[in-house]
Amino acid sequence: MRADPIQRAIDEDLVRVLYAQDPIAFFSHWFSIAMLVAVYWVDMPYPQRFAACFIFYALANCAGLVLWMCHRRWPDALQPRAWIYLHAVRNALLYAAPGLAIWFAFQSPHTNLPLLHTVLIVTLAAGVFMSNGFDVVNFTTSIAFLLLPAIVLHFDVHTFDRTILAIVLAFFFGAINVYALSYRKLFQRVVQARIDQQTLAESLAVQKLVAEEASLAKTRFFAAASHDLRQPLHAIGLLAASLNDPAATHTQHAKTADHIVNNVEALNQLFNQVLDLARLESGVTQVIKLHFRLSELFDRVGNQYWPQAAAKGLALRIAPTLAVVHGDPVLLERILSNLLSNAVRYTESGAIWMGFRRSGRSAGGYIEVRDSGIGIPPDEQERIFEEFYQVANPQRDARQGHGLGLPTVKRLVELLGGELHLRSVPGRGSVFRFAVDTGDPARIVAGLNETASGGPSAPGRRVLCIDDEPAILEGLSSLLGRWGCIVSGVHDEGQALRALDEGFMPDAVLCDYQLANHRTGAQALAAMRDALRRRGREQAVMLLITGDMASAELQALASQGIPVLHKPVTAARLRRTLEMLWQQADRSPLLESTQPEREPQATPQVMIGGHAQGAG
Ligand code: ADP
Picture (cartoon, rainbow, N blue to C red):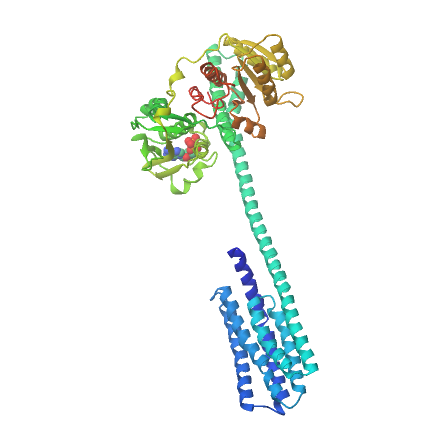
């Protein structure tokens, strides 16, 4: 049996075709009645039975007409299958009359009558084949009543020519059934092809709509991004030009320089937000789950926002909790930071509450951030998750944010396997909530805030930098040099291997992704790792720096746990990442490589300084 929707489509087509032929059948049956009555008129055997039979035939024809009219008037009154079965009943009644009436011919002394009647029956059978052949029930009920009585009665005469005629009729009966079978198959294939085409057209239309929507969203994204990026750039240009003003005093220059620094910082922040989102979209963001005390994360985030809340006269309440959760603390921190920063920004009086609620299931609970702020109108509650969308910032004043926080939060929550829920009443406040999994206290390996103090230091560490861009190599070398590192800068993999041969054993290898001669940083790092392993220096840390976003190779690296930093990389982010990786390597000397593992037990320190790719 076919899948229901397809069978239903076939049935609908069957009903259409069956009933469309009925007016022609109606006329041919009246013609047949007239012909038979004319043939039998001269010598009518058993006139009463004959009259009853032909009245029945006429009534059946009228009933068929009524059925046809009902279907025309109320096509949806019955299921397609029911219309098909009703049509089959009508066929049985209509064709039984002329089929059985051949008995009268055999009762007549005129030997030609059975032959004449047979010709008429065969003509009707051809009509049945054309109009009902594609449905097994309708075809069988008609053809059996039409032909079988004639075949039996001709055989029963026991003369040579009648026996031959009966055989021919039986053969015709078999053949017409076989043809009808292939006719039905063809019909089903045609309907199937039509349905496939229709489904394809519908799915193409949906895909087209999705593509158009995506293209529109991209256009909106780029329009808003270019506007928000242009603003600080424009300001920096003007401010930089004013530095050339010979009439400006030293104090004015210092002030201008401060403005420039502020604008660069704003630009950097926006870049980072956009890149965060792009990283999330392209799937290179790693999730590193740990078992940790939620209260530690709450304290950490709460401490960041407590001063801002206090400055606005808001109470920031963090519900004490003993919950241990299993999640990625770095990503959770980004989520909560965004939600708290919004809560503070959009609340003028009252309180902000952050806490954990058990869900009733042992599997976990919910983290909630609530505020008593301005709230979000119902018709905006979906749109605020679109990139660069802000409810009330038509001038796109950068001090009021850029509309990237919630889209990032939503994707982060989804990346962690949850769903972000929002409840908000304008004028009363908002609640953002998402589920977290319960952790196992026995598997907590380190406190979240352990490395805030006392990370491993950079001075004295040997760093090998690989970048084919001389300016970047120089900038990187001088930055690492200022941190007290011993740096060797090389342009490609070959030079890097030579540096090893010459005895430079690095504690870290920093590598750009796109290298000269179509080599990638991933290939260079693999070669370096092999070379270092051969020299017994497995604990040297590897770090890839890239401006690429969505390459499949990067995704593969991310999934293998190889740390990737995305340009622009700030000095603080680079240092924090390196320190985190060194700390991990120092604490896990037995590990084969220094890359963060996805299993928390093996590398409990990974998150302490932040994510390799999200640190800073
Ligand atoms: P941003 O806060 O930088 O504008 P978001 O993406 O974080 O960007 O938020 C998008 C919009 O959602 C904001 O412009 C604001 O109008 C609304 N919004 C977000 N959080 C809250 C909140 N807690 N209360 C009221 N409105 C909010």
